[in-house]
Length: 138
Image (cartoon, rainbow, N blue to C red; front, side, top):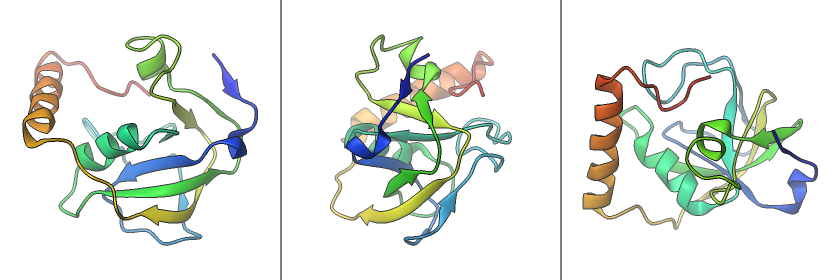
């Protein structure tokens, strides 16, 4: 599994529905934004606005989707839920970490996916859930 040696060389994002402010931490051990809401062993982040948009749109909760600019406080690694299973080579630039992410800002001018594309993704995730397959395995 690849580890990003210099996470400071990329702008990194986290998509969610949580209402956070600069200086807040996003930490592992809280309920996941997805699936059965198990305690998350990792915090997920990405270097692409598109992947963060999916996170903001698909997270559970009633609030609006938000995309935060984050800074890892420890090492990050490729997200095996995507990299090893769907997108070899990590073109989505999706990562995970067991260390907190520090919120440094918010992207306020992002644009969501088309409603049809978003519904297709929700339908796909619902089919996986019916089969007992979790989108995130850890």
